[in-house]
Length: 326
Image (cartoon, rainbow, N blue to C red; front, side, top):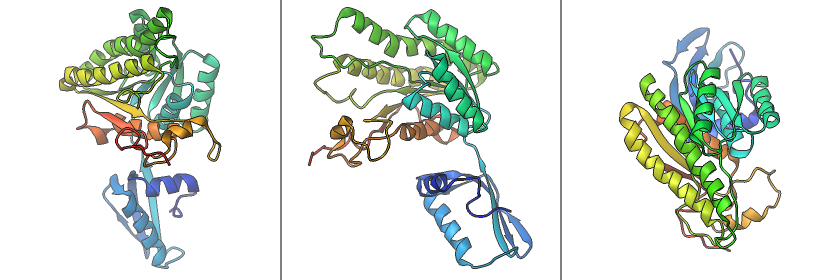
C-alpha cells in the first residue's frame, strides 16, 4: 500500500499529472476494511476525475489499514524505441528525457558527444534507457543513412519512433543571406529529415508500423520580417508531413508534426526579449521545452493511433487567434 500521492512522485509531478488534460495510465487497487478490490487496468482517468478520486479518498476519513489506495503508473511508451535528432539541448533534449521517463529506449543524437553524454547520463540516473549516437546531419543521404543504421543497432534492431528535431536558425534578412547559408539551412532543415525518413519509414512499415514526428514552427504559416529562409524550410517540413502521412500511413506509419511557438528554456520570472512576441496571445507568455515534449509523447503513443498528417500547434495561441498587444 502507498500513501496518496506516492512518495516516489514529487509534489510538482503530481500536480502536473492531476491537473493536466489527461492523467497517467493507472492500475488501481482500493483496500477497504482489509478487503481488496482491483479496478480493471490500466485505465485512463481524466485529470479532473483523478483529482476528485484523490479528494474522495481523503474525505472519507478512514485511517490506518481501513482504507488505502495502491496505484502504479503504466508508462505510455513502454517497450518502444525512439530516435530523437538534435537531442542534446532545448526541445530535443526535453523530448528525449520525457520519452525515456515514459518507458522508451531512446537514441539521443547530436553533434556534441559531451552534451549527448550529459543527456544520456541524466536519463540513466533516473532509471531510463538511452544511448548517444553522434551524427552531423549535413543533408547528405549518406549521413542520414548512417545515423539510421547506428540508431537501429543501439536500439536493438528497430526504431519505433523517429523525431526529426535537428535544425538551424539563421535570423538574417533575405538580402543578407548568401548562397552558402541558404544551401546549409536547407541541407540541415529539409534534406536531412527527408533522407532520414526515407531510410527509416520503410523499415517501420515492414516491422508493422511506427510514428514519425517532425518539428515545424509557428513562423511557417505567419509572415515575419526576418528569418524568411528558416520559415520556408519549416513550411517545407510541414508539407512533407502531410505528404508522408499519405505515403506511409497505409503501411501503419503515422506521420505528424508539432509546430512550437516561442519557446525558451529559462527560469520563470526571468525576462527575455522573446516575451514581447507573446504579448496579447491567449497564453500571454513563452512556452517551455517540456510543453513540446508532452505533445510529442501524445503523437508517439497509442493514444494518437487515429491521428495522421496533422500539424499540432503548441504555441500558446500565437497562430490561431488575433494577437492584440497591450
